Image (cartoon, rainbow, N blue to C red; front, side):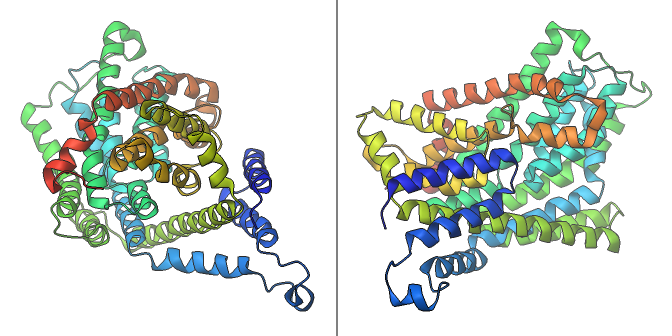
Length: 455
């Protein structure tokens, strides 16, 4: 039954429960089933009297669960996760960070730059924001603290760098977006290459300029002067190059049409195992840990999808999507005004919600309106992808800050982490502005590879 008032109540109650700290995935399932039972209820029917559980919501929940499990595109998620966990367990990131420190030692804020590049490479390989931030918190933060780096500055570098993996391909978030919006994952990956590199580059430029202006926040650490240039090159050759080549091969096989994302992810997982063998760090215990963590993370992600799709289906059935769509269309907005409004809504939703709920519940509200306003769906997707970076960086619900606080505990206060990440939040917003002013940042590469987009 169509009942927009109940749909809005459903949405408001969900956000309220999330703010209280209830688990998001199971809150979505519970809200979807609860309000769905009302939406699909047949008053006065024989079913109501004879069988209280004979309600279409249970069929919908079952079908959504089955759809998630059989979705070929989503098969890439556990394989990319496994590749990331193998790389993490093989101590490859530790080698990478140390070699980049040596390579950047003459630059202002060399350890921060090394941390950002390490975060970008590792988050690209894993796609797990929590894993990147926690590992770099344990690895890079103590090193920067020993070098007398200011705590808030170090925390901001780690939190901002750790979120890059949901934007830079091969990104799990883009795989999910392609499944929701029915867009080509190949074009999405191609469209995300330059926005991701632009954002990472702006982070590095910001660090260098800030340290140049105020060297006290990141004093130049003492390095072993006996280390030769050849040793530095060899260190990079054995740490940075292999992992980067693996990522490039995975991404290149996808963009070149040689493999689907799932096939490329499978080769990436195998490549991660090969790297671990080459570094002599592959043990049966580490493989078991990687498999366990992959299964755990995949189960969590899948339940988020099941809950989100069930919630979104009931919300739409009750008329919630129509209410919001009619409200936006009634404003008679210009295309630029629509883009600003849509991104502002997504930005605000990033405070209490994670990227998966925003993508599955709210992005489908805007997708049907793109043709009305003449907006390229791949351009809109890149604006959303950049915007979702803010969901990890916006206080008071900045998840990357809580990930870092969880591993550092009493070494830093949460307020200091929030202070450190605010400049990077501004850089993300500036990147969105730049991409709006110059859409070819996102559209040139996919058009070059696959030809102009034709709706």
